[in-house]
Image (cartoon, rainbow, N blue to C red; front, side, top):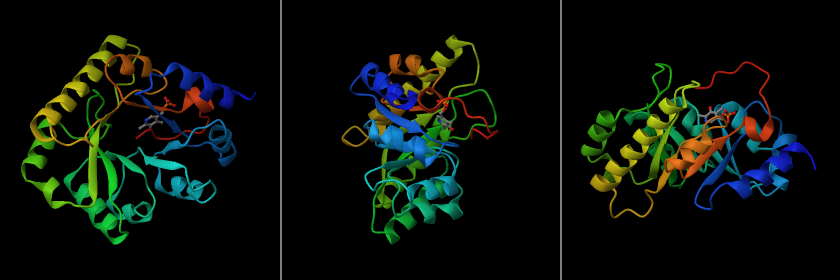
Length: 228
Ligand SMILES: *Cc1c(COP(=O)(O)O)cnc(C)c1O
């Protein structure tokens, strides 16, 4: 058995049933993706539109693609026809653009609101204040072609696991607050996407429903890429 197949098998066994696995295939080949696919994996994540599109064309149609990186509004149109979930919604304008392009494609697109939970300034995302301000405008009733499924966040890149844990606890509290205030009767608002290869166990402890794992499945990435 090759490593990718084995890694998928181990992770599926280890992760609790309620935690979905997003296989982050950025910088990896279609051959690597197909090894994971043949091991039963169907959900894949990419952080760049062009790379996502070129892979989309070469894999079976039941692959579910998640966009997990910062998304420019002028590129939404390329994804709108097929993307399964956009995890990195970080502005009002982006959400409106997704709605518009989804409508043109006759689709309703699942989205997560990305929150800024890390101390690095480079990580995108809403603050809780910004997100509440947005929701208070009534935008969610207005946008019929987006389905807000929950929240997403990236912890600080650090060895300080107490810090990482406290950031995940914070994201869970953000989810709970939004759920209580605006989504109580919404059965779709269920997802907390947190946890990467170095910290997913902590994330799962703290309530993650979706982990995004690249290195742990596909091995190290050798080319320099920007993680945002
Ligand atoms: C690259 C990336 C991941 C996966 O990172 P690993 O440490 O390789 O598991 C998860 N989430 C986002 C947003 C990423 O850009």
